[in-house]
Length: 66
Image (cartoon, rainbow, N blue to C red; front, side, top):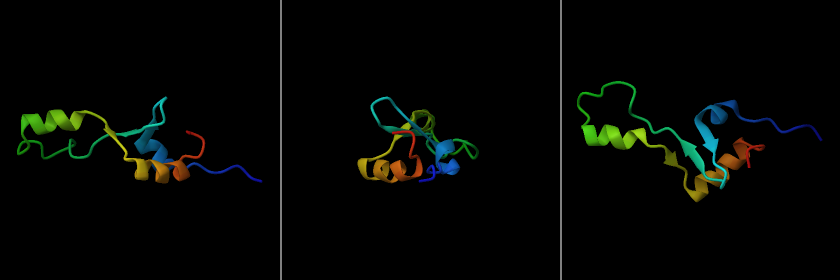
């Protein structure tokens, strides 16, 4: 059986922690920042964590990371 391919688009966006959680960078911090409050921008700096359902989908995209 051939090796499974990793979806490179997902590999660039997600990283898997040691406990199996999937982290990602939140959107909205690239441009048009003047109208966003300091508190909102500060909260966007923290990494997001995928939900359990989304993590199951990510397992299919990143077969060798789990």
